[in-house]
Length: 363
Image (cartoon, one colour):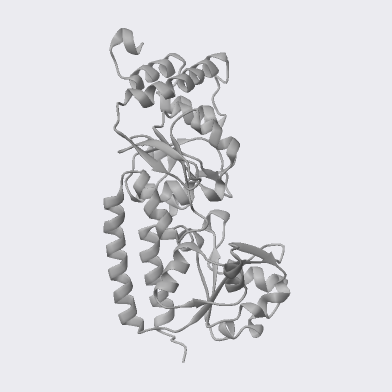
């Protein structure tokens, strides 16, 4: 079709989708990935198969300038200087910051909330971005990617991270488009964000956001003075176990940029090079500090009181065991803002902390 009619590849793919009863190629790909197409038939599989074959053609057809990039696995990958069609293999740690950077994102994994509604974790709460209003293609849940759907999106760059890296998945992606794996686990979160901006061709946006955030931190230090406080971060699960964290994304970045020091089990995990660990609720007193932070997840139906209610359910009167809690310094923040790293979440956490801490400085 493309050769005979002299039309762009995307227009040819839209024609194929239209002939099978879909609005366009994105509509076909979305329904195929969701498993909701009534034509889950030979015709749909044939069309998606065509996309798989055409993905490699599409990449070369863009005629892009390429460059060499050494990723977290020490692989040298030839990637576009200015990617036009990026697939994100994580929603809250890849897609969300790419949306903030206004990168050319075409597809991402997604999730279902407690009501069964599809969403892009963090991006929905932070930017109001949905699959419907953004035109992004849903390609499956995390860890359950539909590779044919990814190929149908015709990416010219696929981005993975070490926290979700799998060699089998990587091999499948390499057959579709240039694929890079970024270090999201053993380097500072802002360095990871810089790497993401680099491969997406958005370093200028990153530098502008960083300068604005650093200026805000300077102002916050002026408001708070030079706080010399300690903190811990944990989550209590429904089964009563505690999850301790050695670092917690945007929240930890801001706390430590303000001069706070992590102590307790989290500091032990950090020294051991471990991100998180479950432990018994009996260790809750080990988490006492000047400030204790917990989070609630709105996508799971949580509200601001949910973290406290979960602890109280398994350990009644727990607040009496923790000085920080007894004195009103056990703080719950929205998880969708506390953990994902973006300049929006960093700035939001600065304001949350100034509001929460400024009025009750510890002597």
